[in-house]
Image (cartoon, rainbow, N blue to C red):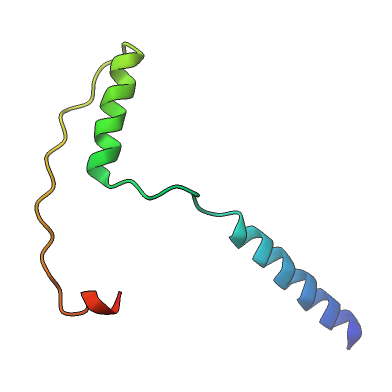
Length: 68
């Protein structure tokens, strides 16, 4: 019984270590911001510039937004 308990503990520790290494420390980029940054990077590198991104439309309110 102790062998399986050790195995479960090690598996959980490995899973926790893998999950804590995920993600970014900075804020998230919207798709529009990422496209604008990609255009700037392409211009600096003198590579073909991707198409101009469309401005995002205003978010619509949703009934469950206050819960988030």
